[in-house]
Length: 356
Image (cartoon, rainbow, N blue to C red; front, side, top):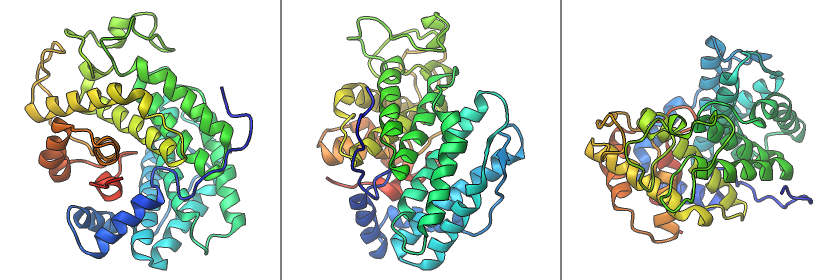
């Protein structure tokens, strides 16, 4: 059920809460690693310029332009918060204001939904950080809020019929934008979608039966890409591509739970085992190079994304759980080789090693 009354939102409180931002800010000021390395990389992305369009066609170069600007907006917002340098604040606001003219997406298929999720989560998180900048006028802010409703909500509020990573990416954008827009209905709509998707994406042997969901076409084994071994932590796309889609889906699920947590809504707890099993299994597979008999193809990908930081921050940093494989993959691969792309953006810089 959706909330029937307006909730009181906490700001900043989308993907990045104030305590997390302040913790990292101190680390940057003290020039500590591993935060400083990622800060310098993000600072290099924090440049001016925009390619704002009235419509985004997710099947041509418009998509790449919007991706670049979403990254710029978020990079500038983070660097401003960590340095208090108005130059970066103005660049972030410049990008957000420029994109307030966006009317919508016209690619014509579910790629629009995925692209809206990818870039919307970054624009939403950036806007939420910049809410605290005194140089951003209420009128300008309201134009961005209206643009989110006009251009993004129609693409995000209907789940893609594709694989679960797309739906989770959409929800990631929904809940980040809902916080910035102070939109209780959208916030709880995102949580309802999360609750429906999670058991249909992250498997537990204690499930009495596999959850069905729109898009599975009534063929559960095919939808789960024919696992050869059903184990706790298996994802709907483990046997499709555990190096890309499964890592994106897990990251998006953790983003959603983190935003909700920052607003005082705990959707982590009801999924503790489901999410930590997924983190640990995927980490072990990536670290060992072996799929552990879960799929016909027993060789893992070489791709590693910044997927585990937020989950480790919550379950280890806040809750004190031991996650040995997650810890190992963070130290050995993510912080050395991890790729930040689309809505997975330099998460060591925002959540790495934060306690409580």
